[in-house]
Picture 1 (tube, helix red, strand yellow):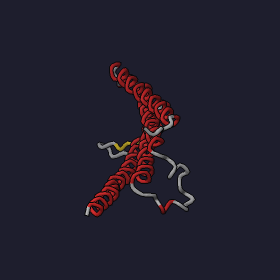
Picture 2 (spheres, rainbow, N blue to C red; picture 1 turned 120 degrees about the vertical axis):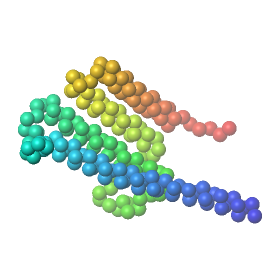
Picture 3 (cartoon, one colour; picture 1 turned 180 degrees about the horizontal axis):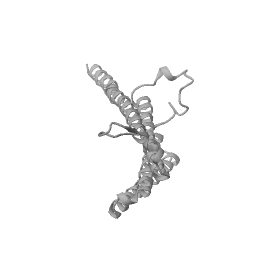
Picture 4 (cartoon, rainbow, N blue to C red; picture 1 turned 45 degrees about the vertical axis):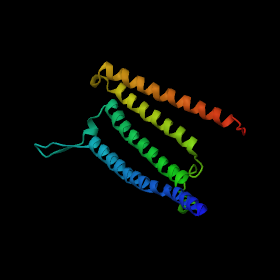
Length: 184
């Protein structure tokens, strides 16, 4: 009787990993929203509709270099966020739920897919956050007249905290990988 209860409990615990599957489905849907936002940002950077005259202006032709860089940086920022979400979907699903068999023999399978463990995922996640923070900081530097000194200082501090956290996480993972586990 005890073995049957233990087996049922263990089976239930093992099967509970499937409760994460809907989370990854929602993340997939989030990618669609990110893609729509990229298209919206691109369209808004190219043209402007004058609500009074109903005229379409191709404002990108009037952009200076800074405006063009800011527009492109917004799209790069969204692309990095999309890549981050995709990485979490693939690595999280494969590490915690199930292997993605459909990708096993596909030529389109990303080279890192199935090879990123939890430690690697954490480092990639922090690296992506640092890159996103860096792009936001660059956007702020290119548009200083619309930001207060206080905002700029806080963005710099937050970025440095992300960088420091990433370095410390990498050092901890390096130390953990070199540590040999001995039985007590």
